[in-house]
Image 1 (cartoon, rainbow, N blue to C red):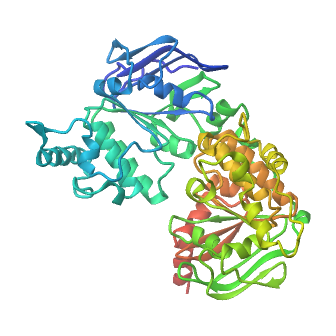
Image 2 (image 1 turned 120 degrees about the horizontal axis):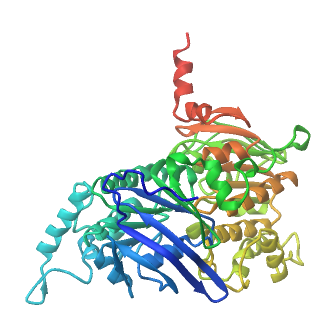
Image 3 (image 1 turned 45 degrees about the horizontal axis):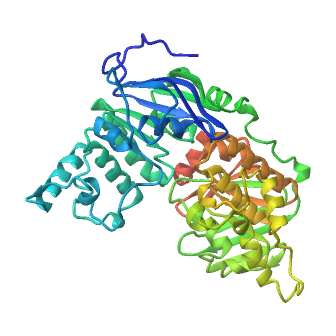
Amino acid sequence: MALSDSVQQPFGDQPILEVKNITKRFPGVLALDDVSVKFYPGEVHAVVGENGAGKSTLMKVMAGAYQRENGQIFLAGEQVEFDHPQEAQNAGISIIYQEFNLLPERTVAENIFVGREPNRLGVIDRKQMESDTIEVLKQLEAEDIIKPDALLGTLSVAEQQVVEIAKAISYDARVLIMDEPTAALASHEVGILTELMLRLKTRGIAIIFISHPLAEVLDLSQRITVLKDGVKICTDLTENLSMGKVVEMMVGRELSDYFPDRARPEDIGQVMLAIRNASNGAVHDIDLEIRSGEIVGVAGLQGSGRTALARAIFGVQPFTTGTIEIHGRAELFRKPSQAIRNRFGYVTEDRKNEGLVLMQPINDNVLLTIRTLQRLLARAFPLGIRQDKNLAIEVSEHMDVRTPSMEQEVQYLSGGNQQKVVLSKWLATDAKVFLFDEPTRGIDVEAKASIHERIRELARAGTAVLMISSELPEVIGMSDRIIVMWDGTIVGELPAAATEAEIMHMATGSADNDAEQTP
């Protein structure tokens, strides 16, 4: 299915960038197979697909990082050849990767003009460079937020991303490729990026946008291209597509098959975790029960206390008041090692910094927590517990970690496979209570479906699961009950079939305000 070229474009009907019949092979893999796409100025064009669909390969071909076997690239109607990314950037095609290409120990100005600093008689003219930086930041309306002499390492992730965009703009970019630009951002920072994209659109810049959260894709883009196994499945206007249709094209099945079946009433057993009137500095007055066999979803806006709740339960920032019962026994974890010893698992929202040792092989990462548990239980189990490589292989295969070797360093895996390694690490401990914080953030649709099924498998086996997610469709699709947080406390509970409107009503504090106004 292809979009008619007769659709009126805001900056004319001619594409600023066009790829025709692009083919790219790697050893044993046909990464791109005869792909043709047009990108128009003043438009956000999303490119979506599973991991391995060819999205990043296509971006790198357009940006000069990869050389194609066949096909042509046209920029403003003229055929171009790029042997190096710098050539593409000089021509007006800039790419911003998920992992920033910035120098944290240098200033904002030095990062924007690195390698092309203004100089006088061979000496860097810092005054001119900072003045030029201000002019670039003004184009993004960010001159009052980011200062040219600020060290990059002192900026937030969102501000560093602004610097990356400013660097691209300084090359007079006509095409801006953004690969997973929101993956590293907190929810409240996504709005900053959205505003920047709107400003760039109005200047006639074509924005090519890769993202896994489809709600974000549908909200921000005007056009969507779907890739699958290196082949273009569709290019169409976003207004003509739905989330269900996009998912079906990406993975070959309907959205209704996206989540596993919920627990039946008879599948839910005894209370595994009971929290009564518990508080610390981040959350307060927490009353919560989680039973074996059920998944309790946690919804709420950024800063509502969702992550703080999980950290308090696991003993990272422990509760200071209240009571907790684990399997009917009074317990209050003061540190994570106590939670691990009591067979709690915690998949944090930041897999790279808190869940994995990126430069270590998959084997060692999978066995990381089980080795900790062995040390904790050494007295009770003098012969130790199983923590061999066969165990790592077994749980990794069950999680469908896709890798040529268990000795491969985790840093070289896709985001979805990295997340599966994190889950494998905790599955190896045979945990009985699981805390999942954003378990599918930044991974593709197929990997999400796989992780959803594994989480439901845990519940079916009698595990108690608390699952935090910013994606309301995920909370609704996965949960047997939903609790909603606002301002550091639980403000209500909803059944599994709750609507997004009902959740947001509570998550914004509206339900609490309604109660106050009720005579």
